[in-house]
Image (cartoon, rainbow, N blue to C red; front, side, top):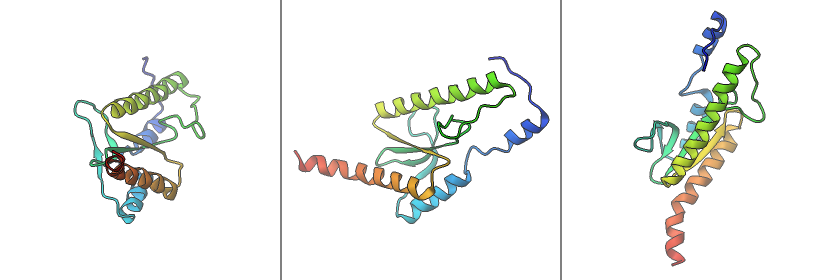
Length: 147
């Protein structure tokens, strides 16, 4: 991929973008904790796979990724920059392919990936995650009762 130079303004703006502990991540973690859920943050659940989940529920094997609309190409809010358009399109499409590959690798290892878009409300995201974790906790119990 050909690397293009960016303006100093763009470079400064992009360097300030957080990859960890974004506002939505912090608010989501606060809501999950208030709901009684306990978790780890910024972990690599799979050995040998260099993919770090934002929130990890180890015992239930649920990995949460909070995806930024720009960086992961949100179907509702993605914007395509006009400057260095080919570079950014390639970058974002590569991120999307990596996300799909991550989902596949985690699923093969018995993990469930939950993806949250940064534009989702904290309440809706926390509810979705909480329901998923609670269902996974109950799954062994329900399966043993049906045997």
